[in-house]
Length: 335
Image (cartoon, rainbow, N blue to C red; front, top):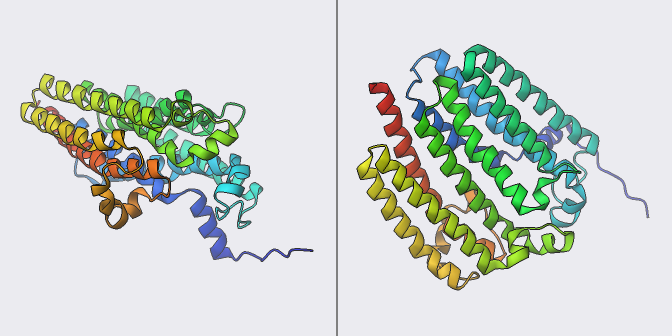
């Protein structure tokens, strides 16, 4: 029996190309970019600096993150035909050739804009910005593209995500407006390890598919409960190190707030570790009716538990992170 493909209109094509860039993921890098700018303490309330700030968010959001998402869909077509048949390529709204044009153009624009910014700010700062951006784009490609496909092994994929989303974003944002602040490097390191822990738990959503396709996520290798244990240990160490950093930087009140945040986190972690499927169910309303549209929803019990934890953890970490970045920025403004 012959099937007839429907002709896709121009507007639908544009929507499909935009969907390939997965706009909801763009915001994942914004907190680190904002923290890096705040920590520099050097951005001025001028049109010039506001345009630089806008360029920064565009290059790491729609361009950088969008590029990595588009590449991922391009190389994961066979998996998406089974797991996500409504995505632009498996649904037939975009061909593989059109998808290739999508991420090739986005990559070219990112490189050109990044080159302009690097030359504009110049010197060591421009070099740092260029190296960070190129590293992020390279990792975004290697994460999904064969033969490297870093995503196939958690010991490669988690550090790649941590570097791309949590580390280089901080340094780039800092370098855009000032020399690199040592305290900002500290925040970048904390965000690297936080991103590693979160990506470890995010793999719960594809555990069944990973087992069948041979991908080595931690959940596949050591089971759900031990995966939560590893991730929670990393997160708790991040908060503990954050408290030490805050004390060393002279932010003593913030240190106590961070330690309180750690205690709240552990309170939520314990029931999830005891029961990876239904633990911390008192947070489910926040996922269903509160932050569900922002962090997603899941039918996988362990992944749903991760989402419940993420609501608490991410809010606490962001509040403390922004407070630290603001205090760092004020310190350098007064220097």
